[in-house]
Image 1 (tube, rainbow, N blue to C red):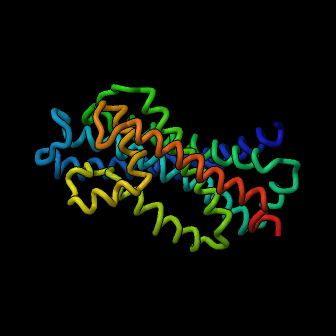
Image 2 (tube, rainbow, N blue to C red):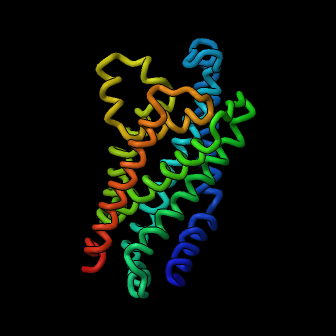
Amino acid sequence: MIGFRTLLWKELLRFWKVSFQTVAAPVVTALLYLLIFSHVLDEHVRVYESVRYTAFLIPGLVMMSVLQNAFANSSSSLIQSKVTGSLVFVLLPPISYLEFFLAYVIAAAIRGVAVGLGVLLVTVWFAPPGFQQPLWILVFALLGGAIMGALGVVAGIWADKFDQLAAFQNFLILPLTMLSGVFYSIHSLPAFWQRVSHFNPVFYMIDGFRYGFFGASDVSPLLSLAVVAGAFVAVSAFSLALLQRGYKLRN
């Protein structure tokens, strides 16, 4: 447990020491999204009955920030350690692959939630969303951050260079989050793209998280919870299998 606590503390300090870049900058980015989209669409779009578009947008921006920053934390930490050669100092101590996994994923989820909380605090004044189901908000935020943290571990293990990691982020993570209903309800899409959206697991993270604020969602919140929990188990199992084999780490 000492090794696990030390590695977790190291990962937490890693992003907190540069919190202006890792926490404050994403909050400002989300605030700019809100200012632009709410100014253009607030008077023209109604998604849920009696819910302003700005209020609808806020939970989506919060969850998008949680997901993207959780992924960035674990993936960037691993690729930096591989490129600089400092990863050997993490692998040499007697830390099990499960402790290794938990330290990176928990730190990633904490950073994601910290950024999401920051986004919520600076945007909630524009159009306070309801907090109908606080427990659902917390569960989806933690599960979403953990999934992206585990996926970041996979990407960090697989990538040998920063541009490979950037490709993973730009061509997989970014499209999945931007096309997941952050800015719209999937009911506003053509039927074909609505069906496509149901194959995007990030859609269920956003929709289930938004249900916690409004008590309304595009699909059943129980279905969203089942999909998100299943995604967490699948990604974690794959990540643990790579760590257990030492894929691209111990050779």
